[in-house]
Image 1 (cartoon, rainbow, N blue to C red):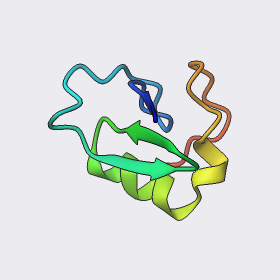
Image 2 (cartoon, rainbow, N blue to C red):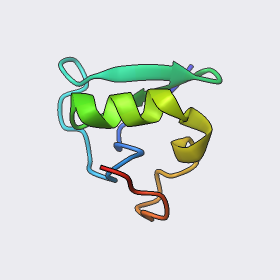
Image 3 (cartoon, rainbow, N blue to C red):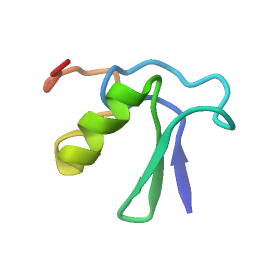
Length: 61
């Protein structure tokens, strides 16, 4: 299983994945900088799943 240590919503690096909110999508665990980002991801994971390169093409907060 893979894990992404960059919040796919905001693009922030996650320093402590043991306390960060997380979701699993298509076999990859994604970590988030806050619960709001996790909620946004959970609503539409396909929108964010490829978004860990620091590009914020779809940012809704």
